[in-house]
Image (cartoon, rainbow, N blue to C red; front, side, top):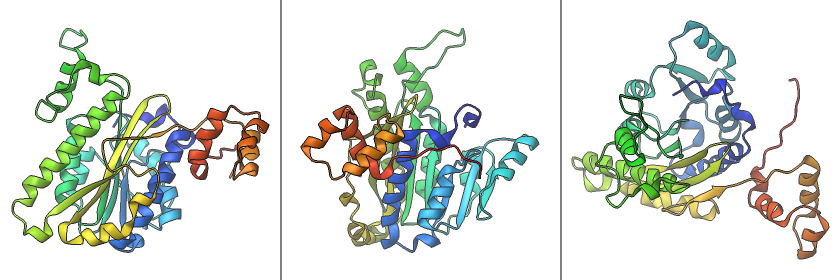
Length: 320
């Protein structure tokens, strides 16, 4: 992980803020597999620990681990200083090394929230979690969904397909993938397919030595696209044993309008609105057709807001 906290204040990215709250709504429903308070949360907290604070407040996670790849004593000291709760424990090192050495006896919610493109490190981390996670655990992966950029030894930029192969290898890339499939949001769709294939292949190998009823199953729940300066993909779901299918069914994940269980994505696209405009729309809910004309706000922005208003961020400047 790059030190992106030096460039990005993760607290004030509106689409990211909406995404965190939507993921919390999804995770609320995991209670059919076990008490949420008994789950462990693992993430990349950065300096701000925004997801840790939200998930602790809304979901009651007490066991929490934040992974940071730094060896600098002064930087570690800064992360330690910013830990929001005693429940949060820091694990320093590459995520690949940290995940491999952790104890996995506890059901876990894991959000591998990378700031870079999909690569072998991400795929290795996914494999580790799929093999080690206790049934009933959930895994979500976020990656930059802009086309990959790589250079040869002479510094010349590689063609985009060669860049992708350099990052993830040949075997997971869909055979019919063409350079045009790595433009716009198509890159996110290709990445999602690669991640899905990696999970399925890992489970297939792992399940070969397990009895039928205890074989692990993966069900996708999130396939978010959003853009706070860079296109991002978040994809993930729950891992459970085949005999636990009834628990999954009782979770009723599909009742959430943003749950995506296939290749079709859910675009998180909050509008730019003033506080006064937000208050005006809120005061008009439920909206009648005439309200759109009375609000003096572009209808497209009002409709975008209505899709996410329950999760829309309210940012204020304060000293606390």
